Image 1 (cartoon, rainbow, N blue to C red):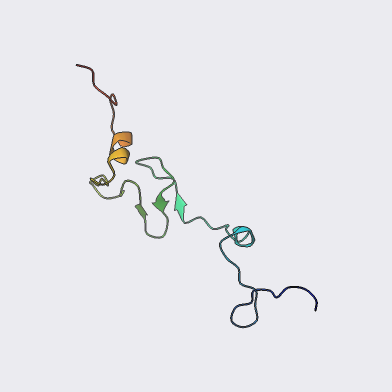
Image 2: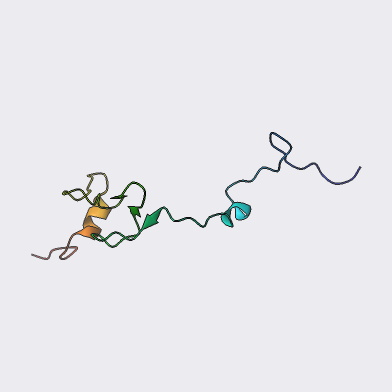
Length: 81
């Protein structure tokens, strides 16, 4: 009649989720700074940027990401005529 039962997975090991216990294991960087857009989105093994698609000649841009297009462009946000 002791303590409450603990959540064990397969193989009698404690199940580790995405929370506090697993954050200590995160020490490898998959992304580094991109030389074209300056974001931390350049994947080292793939050698491509997930934000601007560098080294592709064309910038990454999708019509479903209207706010992202607005952030990337220069000029005023609204125009007064």
